[in-house]
Length: 75
Image (cartoon, rainbow, N blue to C red; front, side, top):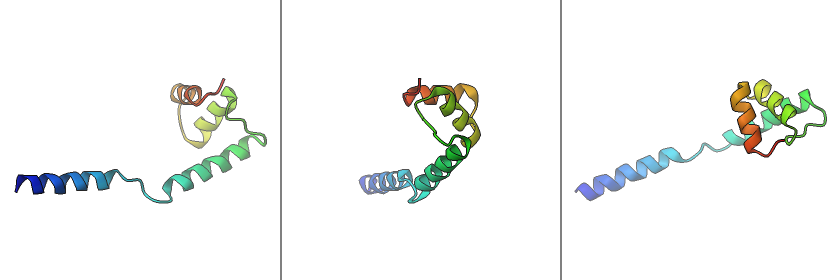
């Protein structure tokens, strides 16, 4: 009986972890559009552009945006 309950709980936990369909594409699309509005030739590898887009389009702060852009390879 305990094994069945454990399996059911594990399945419920794994089902909760799956991403919603379409959400990531919508977010990515809106960020891309916002970046194009700020920079006609947006280069995500340019640290200044990346941070500006992160702050404006993703509503981030300088510290987290700078770290995120650096981790994505911006210089």
